[in-house]
Amino acid sequence: MNDREFFQERWQLESPLFAKMMKALPEGTIDYKPHEKSRPAGRIAAGMAAEADGLAEIIEKGKLEWTSGSPEAVSGPQLVEAWEKAATRLSVAVERLDEAKWASPGEFLASGQLVFAGTVRDHCWWILFDLVHHRGQLSTYIRPMGGKVPAIYGPSGDEEMKA
Amino acid sequence: MIGTAQAFLAELEQEAGTTRRVLDRVPADKLTWRPHAKSMTLGQLALHVAKVPGSLATLSKLDGLDAETVDFEPAQPSKASEILPALEASIAEARAVLTALDEESASGGWRLTAGPREVFTVPRIAFLRTLMLNHWYHHRGQLVVYLRLLDVPVPGVYGPSADENPFAVGAASA
Image (cartoon, rainbow over all chains, first blue to last red; front, side):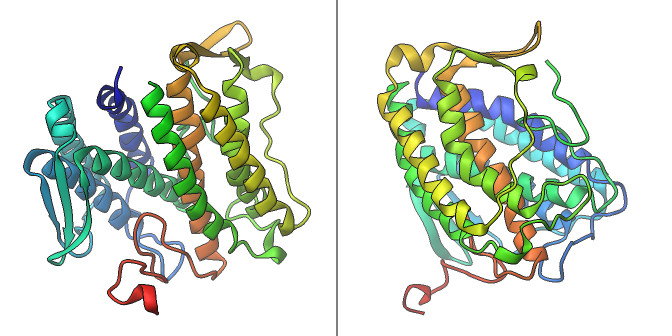
């Protein structure tokens, strides 16, 4: 298994865990933020969906124009729906990756300025790590919101790991 | 898979730098603070973040683990000055394990059981990817929220935070 195949496998395994965290956000609390300077839960989750969609864009077109800020979400089910739509698009793009595309250049631009230029490979991995980071942030929001934190890489205080 | 392990080494160094910046912000007088009764304390979480790479790298050298034989309660540091040295030792251990990893070991299986029940068996390289690295980023993501709740300026991790934007024009000279 090479690095590209390894990423394809990792994405398949990680993707459902993002949906699991978003589904754990208590209904009606997407505007919750733990601190005045924090992003609301809904904006973090919507931003994650936009990021997954953006990675699909980089894979497909070699370039992403990131629009400033995250899309506003209206409800929890819409957040999950947005995530699943983006994750499905990304899964298709990831599945179609071949060695030439994996090594091809990709650009991430924000407000017309180049933020990061690398290979498609570089973008795939760093965006996965960023999504993991934001999922970790969301997990800290959930208990004060009245929800239960799902097990991700190991048991949480609310859920045991299942085989 | 050896190429992947070598890529992990570069990633480890990069992420260690980011993690140092986050752990360096942990306020010494708040180590027992926690955001919820069921959550880890700040000290437990910070020390866990410091120790994840090394402890998981060390575990990866085994063929597996029976989770029922392990106490997963995170250790509580008595003082903040324990945290950064723990990170440095942890990174050194992870670096050594990745450097020594050969093809056979990387693709060999690593098995987690809970008593007689198998939880999973994965190639060692996947164990390192998921539990040494991604798991580390997950908890660091939690830690930056803790810092925010304690009114500590949060460093950017993969992008700008509300307090710091390393990508802003002129940031390097600011």
